[in-house]
Image 1 (cartoon, rainbow, N blue to C red):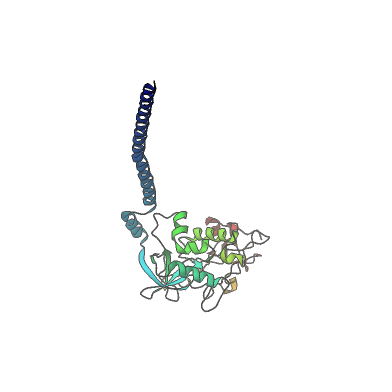
Image 2 (cartoon, helix red, strand yellow; image 1 turned 90 degrees about the vertical axis):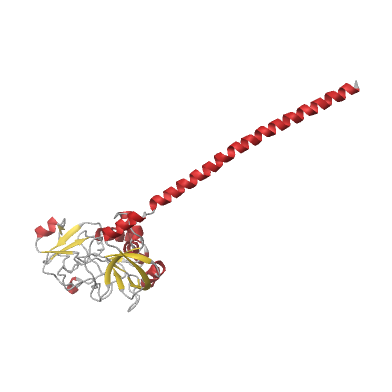
Length: 312
């Protein structure tokens, strides 16, 4: 009896051992089967990420096309003079078009050092792409250029405010908009970024809602741009708001007494803080306090340009 019991026990152990080995084998097969799936999944995720990155980057062909279309010139910045002026490796100075950073060299204006330091940390030693508007140089012999830190795929709001350094300065409160005809290609974008930065109280706007800079040489560096240019001297400035919607006082730029009225006329066109285009005629309540973004000979000209007459 004991002998039979031992045989039964041995048989039971053998059966259990066989079952264990069978189960282990199946489990191993499942793990092996799943391994390629996980590997495939990881590769798939990596491919998606790589494809996404490649979509955001320009191909060599696209880059060449954009450079050709905008007539961009590649250059390397060796030194930063201040927030809106840099020097190239060959010694040529570049004045960024359409913006004014607070002064930090011949005189110091509030937030001037911060603007200068920001430009230094962003551009020193970097390769950039320069875009010309209409004028070649300003009255100091500096080249007037838009500075792209990367080649834009196309001219859109997103590309401008992430790749053009002029716009980046304005958007982050390191500069104020200050455009002068005929170099006004991106004026509408700069005006929008200026308004957004001011409303958000970024950078220099935390110090003074009217801005902190009068610009170099009374913000007139972009005037008299070239001997062949007979365009009007009109500043595209961001006007401060007052209790009256038609008041377009801007203490950040030269007053009308310092402005040179062009042959185009005496009617002043100005965009107020709400984005409204308003023109002012001589004798009007706000005429002397208003900085002109555009000059007109007749009211019809102003109206055709989308301006309405001041109510006072």
